Image (tube, rainbow, N blue to C red; front, side, top):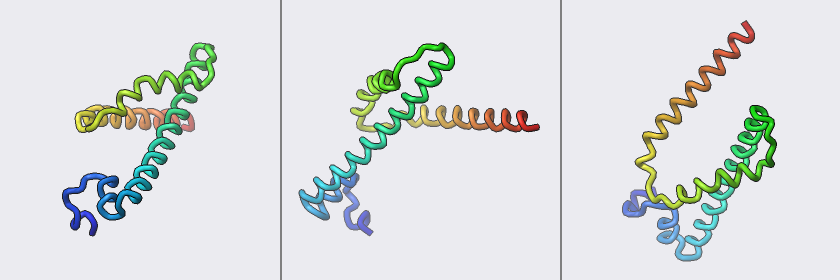
Length: 115
């Protein structure tokens, strides 16, 4: 296993440098960057679109989705510069709890709707 052979390496970028050299590291870094950008952009687009629909439904205030995407990008930029997210595990637990409560509420609503 590669992890046993290089135990001091902690990232794919460092591993690709050891195994494939500088060109391999460049290819891996660019691939990871493209994948991460794709995920972030699709997430921001989805959340911005949903936020726009919620605001329009609840307030009759209509703004294009790009406005909400821009608003979501502002707090996302400084978060991207954080090196370690171990402190965020407590927020993660809270987020999972809220998601579970939301799913249980939707399930209960659907059961009552069709009962």
